[in-house]
Image (cartoon, rainbow, N blue to C red; front, side, top):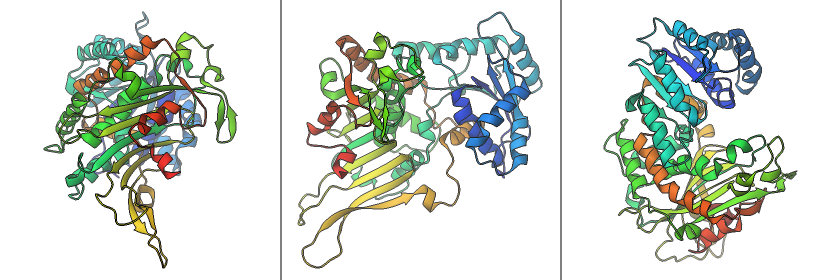
Length: 491
């Protein structure tokens, strides 16, 4: 049981949607089971679903219970008892739902109040205005915005302006669930709580950095969303650039809510712009075609089932993106950062690979550079690949071997999901792992010129078969400088 369980009202707009059912409600159940929510904390789902409390609890019992380890039915029933549902009409004439919410929260004005917008970004501004009109925004209120925050810099600024007109910046929590993963937390600890890495964490010793987020799944039923997002907006602008920041940032002066975010902004502002003709040289975009996933035939992006008919946008959108980025400062001058993400890849993996340079003079044949691998999924952990001698008499034979830290094997406690950590940070008012406005907009300033250049080409992305490592251009992106992707070097 937590010594200081959190007491708050948590209102989730889009509370019956996919994100809520798959991530938010399971995370909140685990927080409740671990004693981190006070008995007074209530969770209110808002949607257009027309459900009452009993209907919503039945839906959660049917759809969520199977995805969480319910070993205590009393705890599960207690969690269900926290749940409520209110139907609302954003921008409509029916204000019944808003009146109901106002009545439910009456008398709780001094309690922390969290509004979680698990909805498309175009709803953020209208929803916040409705909250203000209904008198629901208090000094103790916070609002959580899901990614992607806009489609480009201009739309992100517009959303920030609309939300900022209702909430102070200190009340706005822009969430990126990658920042709640244990490996990401351990990256900060590894760098700033251990002395041995800092002297070699620079361009003198590091050859390059690879950041990969690959998925085996495609987009069945999601093309309507993905046609207007694509891999660059959906993954690179937020997840991968955030990981780059944590690798490249300078040591903050303190472990507090602003120092870490200050250093991340400096990294984003130090990224070398990729514009004009350089976009063709330093970026790759691809779209998967029919192939195999896990030995099973799967269709291409344009033929995924349960989707609307493909449009011209469908033919132009990328399901794979790779970038060669550079951080222009003293620490990282000349070190390329390779960012890569794709759907229908041969494996599911999110990892950061820091490859060190070769030893200045090797007296052994067959030596290879050291690598530090931070794995975010599927199983979180850290590996340091070093050279070792294979046992045996005769000639010295070298083999790269990993010094491995598996969180699941090393720690007996359950490794919490990212959303658990982030939700508790919101409830306790800790914004360290959330993005500030200047951070989001700096990321868009780097991405926008690439998007504009891609749009101007008028040619479809490079095709790659489902189940393959991506388009040939991605291999060439690293091969031009004599490098290889991590899995290619291991093959």
